Image (cartoon, rainbow, N blue to C red):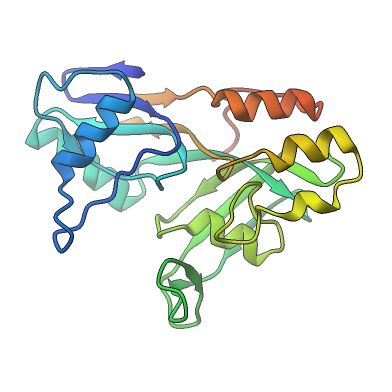
Length: 238
C-alpha cells in the first residue's frame, strides 16, 4: 500500500512477515529487498527505487524508498543524524512505570545467541522514549520514540524492563498469555503470531515529510477486543 509519492520518495506500508534483510555474504541485495516489499504491498516495480532504512521482518509500518541518488543521500543523512523522527506503536505485557519515560541502555550482539541483541556495557548507545496510550489488566499500549536506530532496539529495551512485546517469541513475549485470567482475552492474546510492533509515523521536517501508516488489522482487532482505543496516526511530543 502506497502512503505517499513525491518526486523524491515513495512511502509504503510494510505488512508483517516481509523480509528486508540484505547480506552480501548470503547474496541478499537491497534491490531484492525492495522487490519483496513492493510485491507484498501489491505494487509494481516500474522504476528503480533505493532502500533507505529497514524494519524487522515481523514489524509493520512506514518504509521510505528513494527515487534517485540525491534523495537517497538526503534521506539516509536524515536517519543517521537524527533528523528523521520515528514513532512506533507496541502492545506490551505488564504496566510500565512510570507511564512515560526514557530507556537508555547500550546494546550489542548476544554472544550466546547470534539472532539476538542484548544490553551490554560495551555495546553501542541506544535510547528509546515511551509514552502510555492505554492500559488494561496485563497489557499496555505504548507510543515509542527511538532516538537511535540499533538492531531490535525497541524489542530489547522493553524486554529488559520486564515488558516484552506481545507476540515476540525471541524476547520473551510470546507465552505470557498463559497468565491472563479472562478466558476471552487469553484466547485472543494466545493467537498473536508476530510481535505487535508497528512503525506508525516518520517525520523529516527539513524534507517536508510527515507520513503515518494505519495499524494492521490484527493489532486494531485485538485493541477493540481488549477495550483499548486504536488511536491511529497520533502524534505526541518529540
